[in-house]
Image 1 (cartoon, rainbow, N blue to C red):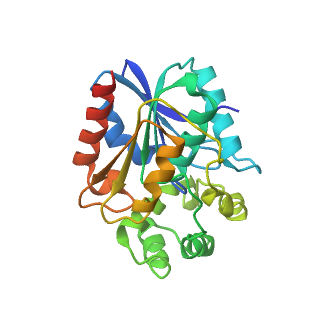
Image 2: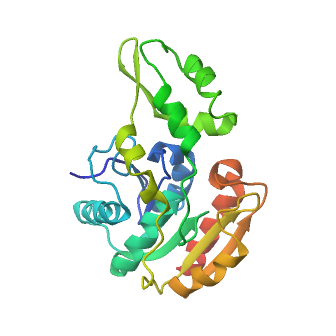
Length: 257
């Protein structure tokens, strides 16, 4: 089973991995911008997300193996790998296990450390969506606002809505399996995992996902890590300040060439 992806452009491969409850489409605008700089951009849906396959197994180990199978299928070597949040954890593990497949690593707003479960309200709200009653995106948004007050977060989540058939909405994600394995999302990178090539960590200045005390841990796993802060941005830094995020990524990959 090979992961679903959208591919833009020609040139050096740049793989982008979305976060928990997201999909590759979340990155379409930035992906097309990266493609204009002579990169072949792969917007990948991780298992149980987007249009990729559903499976009962869900852990960073299987997510990394999915990416290895995808890279082999697409004959990708020396890829630039960019991952956000959960996708960043997948990218970290993949790069430490298969460094020969990754030329440079970019991690967006996540540290190698353990994170406790903090998606309870979101998962409760998504589980409570009743598509026998809810027949429009606006109705879904109104209902979900009782669980998720932030409009930007709801907009991100509701990208998962699709028309199963005429008049019948559904969610693309495998919600039941993601709920069952939600504790896996916070798992730490294995203690001895190391990647010794150019690495960029980007954090939002309004986010607490990468704290000052995480910097020593980051450099223990990633000896060549550079840590930069994106202004006016929280955890979804690529959506909240796409201009500065784009410039930080392009400057890093161009300087690393």
